[in-house]
Amino acid sequence: MDNNQSIPPRRIRYKGTHPKTFKDKYKELQPEQYADDVIKVIEQGRTPAGMHRPICVNEIMHFLKVSPGQVGLDATLGYGGHSHEILKCLVPGGLLYATDVDPFELPRTRDRLASLGFGEDVLVVRKMNFSEIDQIASEAGLLNFVLADLGVSSMQIDNPERGFSIKVEGPLDLRLNPKSGKSAAAFLKSVSKHKLETLFKENADEPYYEAIATTIIAKMVSGTVIETTSQLKEIIKEAIDFLPINIRNDEIIKACRRCFQALRIEVNNEFGVLDKFLEKLPLALAEGGRVAILSFHSGEDRRVKKSFQTMLNLGIYSEIAAEPIRPSAKECNANPRASSAKLRWAIRG
Ligand SMILES: C[S@@+](CC[C@H](N)C(=O)[O-])C[C@H]1O[C@@H](n2cnc3c(N)ncnc32)[C@H](O)[C@@H]1O
Image 1 (cartoon, rainbow, N blue to C red):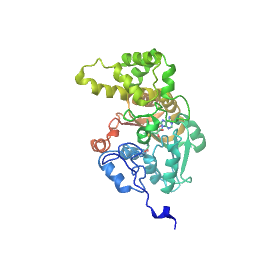
Image 2 (cartoon, rainbow, N blue to C red):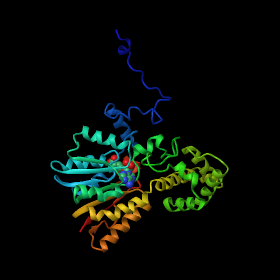
Image 3 (spheres, rainbow, N blue to C red):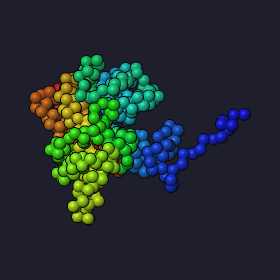
Image 4 (spheres, rainbow, N blue to C red):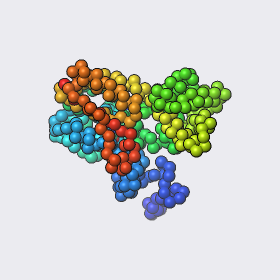
């Protein structure tokens, strides 16, 4: 008899009553096998590890008016939550192109959607930057709709290996595509104080930009290694320890969030690629084509708003959202990650 076959596998052990680290959350990471556990996590207003909950789905679907036979683009595939909803409305006869730069999550999402019945006949997945939307249009023809849900997915934020989260120890990477370009740690090694101040100020409205940039540069000059999320957090903490004790801890967390965001925007050239995408977008849309863009901070929203307004004035768009649409209070309660979202839309004239 094969003894190995008769011994059930040991349960993964973790300290305490609930899993805390990403790896311990093995149930959440296997939603097909542990569906009930995953539902419980969602009911508690949390996002299960390895998953992303799509935001403003009803508002987006209401605006895009996707119908069978159309051709469109989900420029930010992520976990595929929006794509899944779109695909359900596109069949029969429609085709969805979907892009993402993440080389790890993209094949997983493609396979997950294929297992839900949306294979290559209805879904064309490309690992590419949405700034190259013109290439999609030259292959697909003019598009009936485009969706872009900017920023990072929950899978990327929660995975310590990616270095996006201030809550967990990990390499200070922050790249959406870790196989290309410089990590945040590598970027810090050669950045000037002026550049660092500018990006903290402009990418994240960081009020303590001077103190933080000065301390980071002084640490680098003295040979301190800044290669992990917690090493950077410690330096930010030290830089603003002049703050009154009653606000210090809160301010440290906020400053860490803002500085990580500023570095993420820099290493992924997020504003540069968004500008290119917005410029090329009208040329990729069919007459009457609809575009919806979900953004998560003021730097993104300003760009979307300005581009839509300029092109409305030029008669390129026939209509744009007068005001951004915000997720409902109910959605923000159920999913706090929705709280900062702003949705803007435009219709090609
Ligand atoms: C907020 S998530 C999208 C979530 C998705 N809507 C869903 O329902 O799962 C943003 C995704 O866009 C990707 N992304 C960000 N910037 C990109 C760019 N310039 N080109 C292509 N993909 C990008 C990220 O890698 C991430 O997977």
